[in-house]
Length: 388
Image (tube, rainbow, N blue to C red; front, side, top):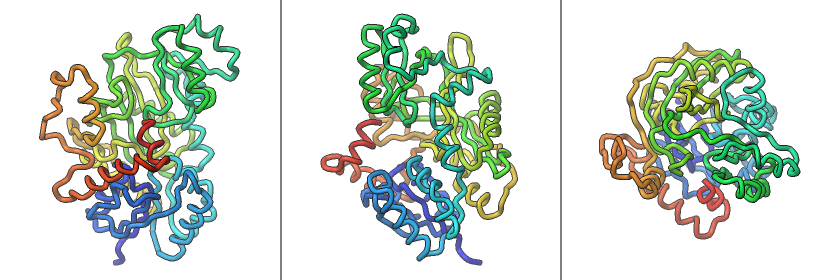
């Protein structure tokens, strides 16, 4: 029986490393690509082949030519882009590329629609889903009138971004127009939402749907720490069971006839205990290693779905499992959190597993640290890390 062969793109990220390790441990031939050789997953013991390609962001046409050539020259069963930019670029050329291997991701138009926070909030409000109070602006002349009615503090969010990129918090009405225009220059017509007070859980629902939009794997986790502290990518998370948010996430994706992996974010409003829908990330998510540790191996399940056409549902997993992103996420949280010595669990708890650190696969740490060096000269790397 032949060894399964997978090509995974976007080797810079921890979620990519999680996929490489998960498939490599199962005996897969895992080729990994990235536009820089200073990429975390390229240093993994489970990386069978290392590839450097033109930047999908800076040179998309060259990247697609390279990708078609690699797929044509070397047999792969499945292609897995891990970042949204790469995923949508690949799926925009699905007819061109799918003749060489399976690409088990939803179409580009649907992915772009669900990734748009303005579209999602409009839809959710129309259908009666609980969301933060949201203001959608399509004319800068609306700003002055809106300034007086906003329930400060508010959050300005780009319609399409990930992590903490472009997010601004506004505490005083005197600052609103200036901060909105600042975000607007880079991310056109961001949305404005009420700030949900601290005290409620932030949760993610991770899902895999088949070609009929039936759920084939689900996983829920709670964010325990984030960086920036006030709201950003999670730096420590724990697996939980939470049927209410899982049901909302599943119903949304089924309605839109989604296929493949997706991640839906919620935050519980402590004022009424209601989980509020925040966004859909129609891609692999940063906390992928936690799901794998808890027993839901999404990369392998996605591979099986692509190859077999369907799989049995996987909904059971261990709760209370914790995993963190220590370099640099949880370190930065510790440095910037005024309550750093009172956190539970504590920063120095050695029992917590990590996205990156592994005695069996130690070299990705070198990849992560070496990528920091490129911040001195590489504009694309600066964009990735300094705007998170």
